[in-house]
Length: 269
Image 1 (cartoon, rainbow, N blue to C red):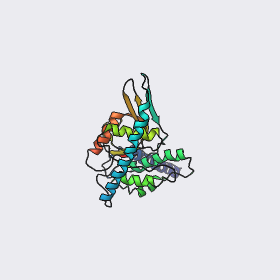
Image 2 (cartoon, one colour):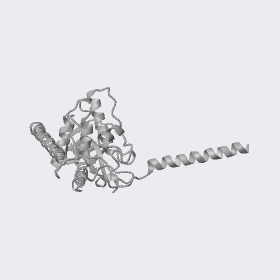
Image 3 (cartoon, rainbow, N blue to C red):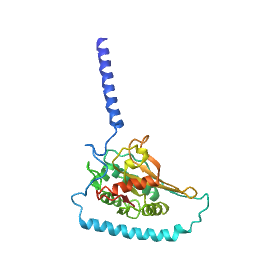
Image 4 (cartoon, rainbow, N blue to C red):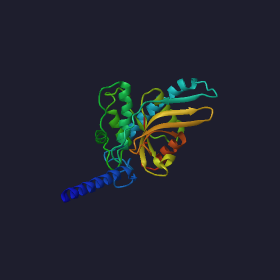
């Protein structure tokens, strides 16, 4: 009897310790600047060259010219009524990041979930660990142009046009044009690099962080504009999942990264 009681006590202690460890793993408020790693790099990777930078600029310039032409030919034809709403949405799966510094690979995986669905492909999505390796994402964070290479490696697999990386140069119109064109044409699920503290839902918690865009909303009567982003933060009840954030907050969050001087591009589209 005594042995049974001692055994039960030991089992109870082990269960309690495991429960505490499990809770600590998922309830901890991680700091993007902690030793656990951060979401985005503050400087280029060692193998990043001037030619890489120039190629990125050429790609973005060409794609933005195509987008501007499309906007002039299509969006201007809309007739605005007092109750009109402009809304574009695509289906992007919420795929929680598996480490504190894999928001970039997770956002790529989320974007690929859209293309997999659109292409009706039977190919499984690549894992976040695979995407982290392809983009050379480490505890120092992700580099947007490296994420571009990772996502474009699956362009043929899921039948989509290649993404480009760019800044928005402090232009809200440029940000909107890229998002509207991408969503209305169903050509891409854009990825944004944001400063979390600029979004009210993060309650002042800072850190550079990647999210995937899945929706745009504009109510003409009130002027209200919102962006639906799929946030890969694993704490869905607090920060992760699909969120309709005000466009002004998203714009400020992107500009904050752009103004930080890291050189890390703020958009994939």
